Image 1 (spheres, rainbow, N blue to C red):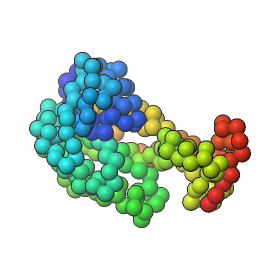
Image 2 (image 1 turned 60 degrees about the horizontal axis):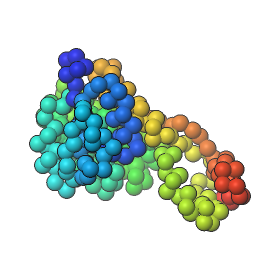
Image 3 (image 1 turned 135 degrees about the vertical axis):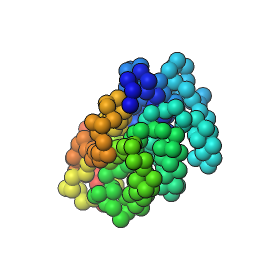
Image 4 (image 1 turned 45 degrees about the vertical axis):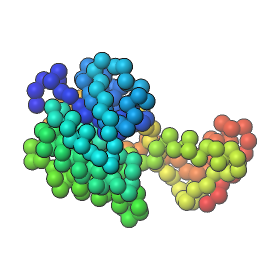
Amino acid sequence: MGPQEQERIYFVGGTGGVGAKAIQDVLANNIPITIYTRRPEKSCFKDHPQVTHVQGSYDDLTPFEQSIGGHTRMFLLVRSLGMMPRIKGAMAKAAYAAGVKQIVAVSSLTVSVHPFTFIGQAHARSEDAIRAIQSVDATYVILRPWRFMSNYAIFAKHVVQTKTLVSVAAPDTPQGWISTDDIGALAAIILRDPIEKHGDAIYPMVGELLTANQQTETLSKLLGFAVAFKR
């Protein structure tokens, strides 16, 4: 790998909370990037001089395949669980063939904690799909975060409406959570570091351990009313 100024990083999944944080930190180090997105006009980096946008989708990867050349590394985050192994495998194959030397992919801690769940299987098959075609002279770094703290925004409306927190876990069972900013920040560190420093590392990520009882106590203070728990 040449000096850092010769780097160019390709981002798949760069418009969400995790990817946007990673892009922000990478750009702070003056590394040019390319973002693959369905809607470039919605990108908060659309006017940045070091950012190139490629419009495309997962249904037709032609725009991706035509634009991946010339990049040294790739950040890969795919949200579609059903299509995830196929999409990640196809993108990794094209990236390695084009000369990408490092792929940093966001997976899930369910791969090791709950491997037989639907989510765990989707991420495990995705990891295996990339390993199966990994170039011998390139690396594959996996981030395995636990529950996204940003998911609270998804069920906050239900908690407010019902005054109840619903969970599959027992009320005193600790659950792991992680900030999306922390995931993006770690991805950016890896993408800036020398490739050989991380090799084919796998990084589990847990930022906070909270039981359901602790969550209802915190939510009650924040919302100003008593939040009950239902398993």
